[in-house]
Image (cartoon, rainbow, N blue to C red; front, side, top):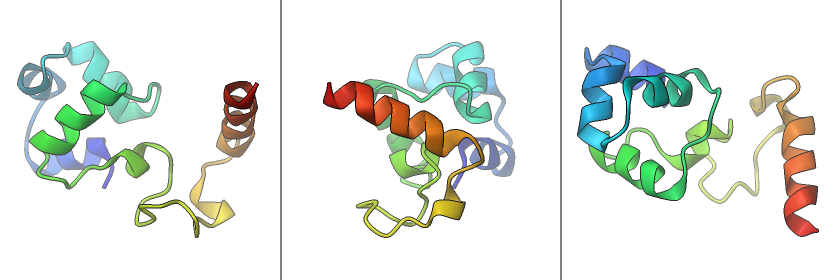
Length: 93
């Protein structure tokens, strides 16, 4: 589930959720809009505070594929596959 959807369904503002995970409203806005991917600590806080409804794969367009082995190409938004490939290549270097 996308963080933005979870926030809407639970009637929480970015600021309210940010207070729960010790982050600013602006940071939550960026996570929810997909502008930024949370770091490990923040990701763990999001999973905990959403009761596992929002998981790390949700930020990568791999919802439902915990291990990522069977993710279909159409699950990554246009342009994201190139960004992911570049990021993967830089991590491998």
